[in-house]
Image (cartoon, one colour):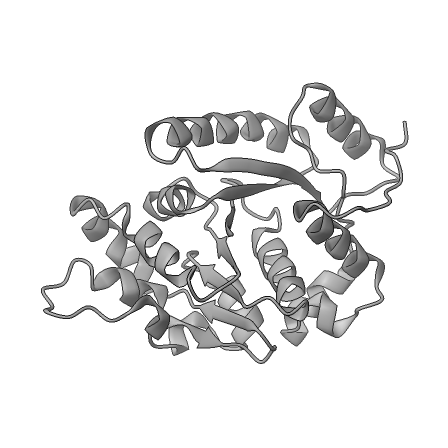
Length: 265
């Protein structure tokens, strides 16, 4: 399964959701790959413990060879790095993505990521793609390459208005480039169950028929501690409430039964 985590809005937890779901997948014995398409490289630093600027053989190098005059291109798996965690691998980001974007766009290389991920799908059970907070060449490439899309949602009214635009953009890409893509769900992140506004927004979106997932991820300092420790929650704090929420989310995405509390009024 090729899954992209996407939202044009920053600060909604794309990297945290990508890495923690991937870590749970790997902990379950699935050979799992994270592809970091965000030039900021947060997923790369989180899982490999090094800034993207210090790494070679990155996703930028993979894409750059598609516009270079080379006789033999390297295989996609040559740009994959093993993480410190069993079964979890990373294709790291690079600051060079910013400089490469215009060249790739001018050469119409929008489908090259899909080709690479399909090939990597022969070796990996699950592939998670982290994206930048923008609808640019790379996020479009990721949406064209993916089979499923998760949309993190920060529970405020600005995020709600942006959500409608995101769904329209995805619908257009589905029609024109990737009829295999499905919106797997909207993930309410940094949810505060005691606050009335988040509960109200999630309830209204659900009543509108939008695919809001039943698991809500709480706001917790434990996630920031996880980032600092460079350890996904499943490894750093397996019994923590937020870790359990991530595990419930993983189960829902994979069609497993989960007992969830109803959303209070």
